[in-house]
Image 1 (tube, rainbow, N blue to C red):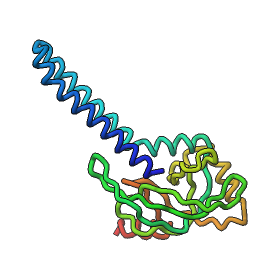
Image 2 (cartoon, helix red, strand yellow):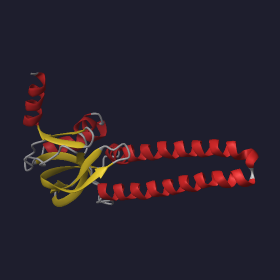
Image 3 (cartoon, rainbow, N blue to C red):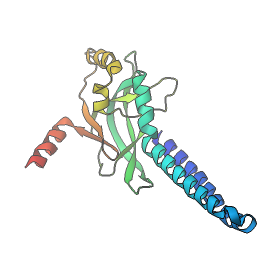
Amino acid sequence: MQVLIARTLNKILLLFTAAVVVLFAGIFVAGHYWPDYRAYYIGFFIFVSIVLAIYFKYIEDNWDKRLILRMAKNGKAALMEISGGRRIMPLRDTALKTYWIYEIEGRLWNKEHVPLKKTFQEKMNRDTEEIPRGFVYVTYDEQKPRQIFIIPNALIGNLPVLAPIVADYEKDGGIPIKYLDAYYNKGMILKTFRQTISDYKAEKK
């Protein structure tokens, strides 16, 4: 899904860029045919360019986050055991921040607690190297099976609608849950809790 979002954003950026180029060319046309209105047109061009830039940056930064929040609020979540992952492409946004798109694989337990083999893409922090094995919660809707994203742990703790879903999985003795620390910082970060504690101690020294 992250690859699809990235490609769609590229298409939107090309469309917005083409619109700005056309509007810029219109300055010369306006200056030739309606010289008295040239200053107004330049102001209009600047305004539209700024609005398009702000709007694009907003959707670039928030598309996946808003989708995750909406699905989580609707209880569209499932438990997933990550078994590994690999880099499939680098990604750079318009602010020149870089990420890695990883293809992550594992087993997803649906609401009936039936394990399903799944792979999905996630936008990871650029310093990510190996994907640890462990459990996370992901967005999951059987009607939209491609929309799988890792839900940050902090979001899970702040959405009461997810509490019964989490409790239901944790009561299932047949699922050997061992959670990963999942949080967002310039891309998704996955760590074992042992690694998180070790990093925290190292920072305190």
